[in-house]
Length: 146
Image (cartoon, rainbow, N blue to C red; front, side):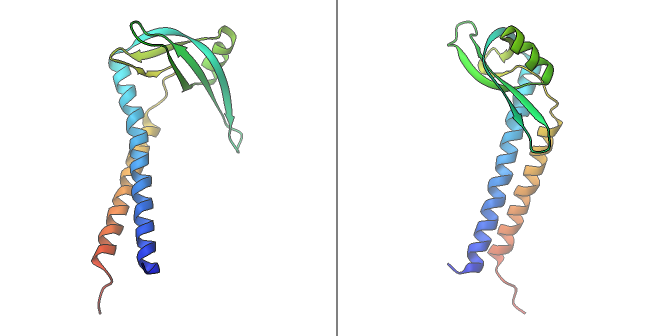
């Protein structure tokens, strides 16, 4: 494979992978929030672990690992991103309220975040995917002959 063709394949594959990845990440979060907003049950869960990711620019993102047992279901243990106030309260009580979708209790959350960033991820992923399609079309067409 000549170097130009290799670059074309590498660029197109990278754009496709990044675009699809962003779209899937955003869609899963937006879909789960929509399901939980329409119909959810709440249960107290036991906090089994906690952590705070510290960003390079001083930001902090706390998370909790919570075990909860929905009725007629095996216990579920999941890691949830949470806000600072919920994080502090959960550390004191060692419990957290988990909101889950009754039809599939693995779809759950402890804290509701704004969905706009995830919607933007879907849009950005779509634009990157479109750029990959344009590159694919351009590279498939081949070099223009003068």
